Structures are given as structure tokens and as C-alpha cells.
Length: 277
Image (cartoon, rainbow, N blue to C red):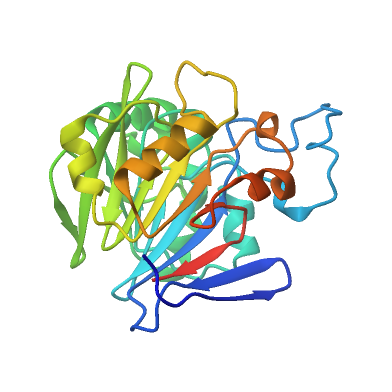
């Protein structure tokens, strides 16, 4: 377990140092909400009406800084807002977990980085996700290149280790009901979203992680997501030093109340939270 934990707050953000060792990976939670975000349009529940900024959740995504490289995992509908909020100046690569719109819809806005950095964006996705990107963003791949469209280099992700600009990335295949989805391990960080089943051989890739980020949608059973209880059970099985829950629905409850129910080594993530390990 963690021997020294330092937590400090600045405005609504928190930076967590997992040890006194040299920082190797920095994670920023760009969004921690489910497909509709929180609050949900027109909803009058206590969570959606909450004044607590931790109950305001954009669609799920993280930014990982490692070995001088900046990777974003998923570009949902709120991607532009997330980049502006965190004052992101550079993204070296985008990795996609799967093709659902709450994880891909903001893809067009990567063109801002094309302009600023004067280079194509490196994009990593499975063959199925690539097919969806080509279909949904067909203008990127057309013979006639309209001025200002995103410029990308598209790379195939398979269920085997890959090195991206010197950084080792381990894809982890999980199941989102019947849809295979990729999680990722980068160093001592494992990030998994949109899952309700992980095979034993894929769990082996996660073991030994210092930080596990895992989806925990709500308390009630769901066809394609871990419930809060299932996510807690999986954390206890895999034994990371600390776990953070993401892809959270308004049905889970108020952040402050749910957090009080959790063991000290399990935290609810929230938008803008930063972790260094």
C-alpha cells in the first residue's frame, strides 16, 4: 500500500502525489461523466441540481503525461471545452477505447493542434473503431481535402503491447456488454471505462498497477457497465494502491455522500482532478 500520500487543493482541483519518488505519470481527468454527462438536460434530481462542482461531470476522458509526451484517451462531445478548461497546449497522440459517440464526437477539434504544432495528429484505434471514424468523419478521408480539416496519421490498435513515441502502452481488452473495448496500462496507471466484464487473462495485465481507474456507473444493475458494488469488488481483487471511479451517472448519488461510503483507498474521480505517480 501507499506509504506517503500528500494531498493539496487549489481552487476546485486536487493533485495527489502517490509517493515521494520522481513523478513518472501525470493524469488529468478531463471528464468523469456517463454518456449524457451530469447534470442531464432537464433533470431535476438532487445530483443534477447540486452546487458541488464535483457533481458537474463532462463525458469521460483523461490526459496522460508520461516521458515528455501528452496522450489523450477519447475525444468526446466535450473535448473542446476540456482542452480549454485545462489550458492544454499540446497533444502528441489520441487513443480511442471504442467508437461510441460519447467517446469520439469531439474528434474534429484536434485540428486546433494541427495548426498550433504544424503536424498531423497520431491517432490509435482498433480496426472497428477506425471504420466508425472513417464513416462519421468521412470528410477527413475524402479525395478532396477541404481547407482546415483534421490532419491525422491513423494507427491500428490490437490487443498487444505497442510503443507510442517511446512510451510503452498495454491495451487491455474488456467487454462493454457484447462490445470489445480497450482499456490501457501506461506505466503504473491502468485506465478502464465502459466495461462490465474483464477476462482473467486481461486482469493479469492490470495486476501490480499503482493506480486503477475504473467505471462505476450507478448502484443498480446495468447491462454494460460495472455497478458501484461490482467496481469495489474488482478493486479488492486486483489490489491497486489506489483506485478512482469514473464514467459516473447522476443515479450514483451526490459525490460527497458516495465518497463517505468508500474505503480510503478508493476515490470518486471528478472533472479537473490531477494525479501524479
